[in-house]
Length: 210
Image (cartoon, rainbow, N blue to C red):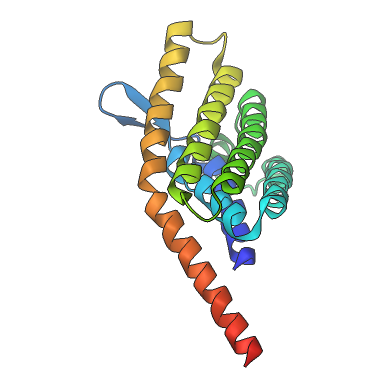
């Protein structure tokens, strides 16, 4: 199951980077990148890995996510640079969708690496304190803290100096509120996945003994 969790985590990261160019609105004031819809599910995956497989395995998953994103940036750059066929008219659209600005890419990588490591750290500390109890607490506390850091770092690096400070703060607050409630909403998912994995592990042990 760990292999599938790692694959899903890395796949969602790459997909989030691709769809991030689209902006959508909630009401009149909340403008968010489409990546938010995908990115909010990466933290529960990390939390499940820490809960079931431990801190060190989760840190390996985070590092794998960083390496994979760097590889994706490299190969996307290569494919953009390839000479297009004379009859193909989609080069400009292809570039627009797949090539973000260097500043946004750097902001994304830095915020990802710092916030996910914080998530692992906080979750592990709370797990050591409470044991198997209060999964809901460590899931939400770690995700909410790391999402706040992720949002603040990303928006600050990506947009500081290009928009007024008030707008910058508003962007951080709006995105974090969405992520805050998304964290609460995904808590049952974490419980369900953890329960399913542990049940599967117990069944495998019974089969191995018998």
